[in-house]
Image (cartoon, rainbow, N blue to C red):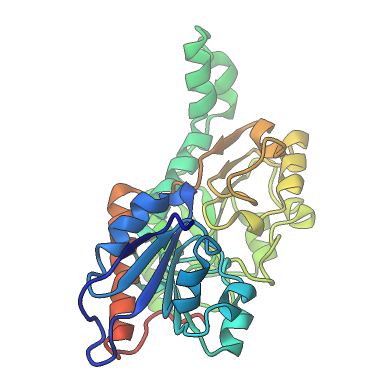
Length: 338
């Protein structure tokens, strides 16, 4: 028996009858509750809310549109949905969609990249992690709770952001928001990526300089990852690249867990070849108890919360739904990634 939730009213696409929308919202990002809120934004469609794409085979078979919040859409799912026209990711990331299968079927895949829905809050979380590492907030708090006045012990590892070099891997919408905040902290900015941004953008971002990734890793005091997860970027930060970092450097990842070789990072932290890491994303999610980073020294961990503030969830849902409504009204799609 399906545990999906179905709503049906009206006619969103005039003349064509209402479209069938399958809303796939994984439990760890809100599940049915979040899905029901999203469905309420599509009052003219037949919306079925599920927590996994496999949950309701009939709804998948009939779906014209899949809206997914981190719920994987595989080649098998696409093959099982002969009416499918669009997969709309309610996120910047789209690594959980089989893009090759979508292209083969001429199914459009879109994210919410240009909306900027997550940009500000992910940038804030990036700085929260950087500041927590620089100021040793976690060990300081833990020590005080245990009646341990840790100032003498922590003092030698406390540091500042001002005057330090921030290396941004991926200067997209989120990376630019991070850079804007780095200017306010009087940081020097390096960035890497396939494309250099216009000179006027670099000037506006405190004279940011485009450099090769390995040069960025060698020169930076803080490295923050904001690249998409693709075949080319999986384990972009591996043991060889971690070895390029300064022993005083901090690595922050609020993008995708698989950008980093997690075992290699645990090794580097254990050996002291880098000062610390702030990690908001894992591979897989949720992480298992076997993940070595959970026990690593000088890490600050958060459960993929960077892009899910109360305000951001509203912006994400609206951006995803507006693209779906535009598609049903015959308008050009935004943020097509496949």
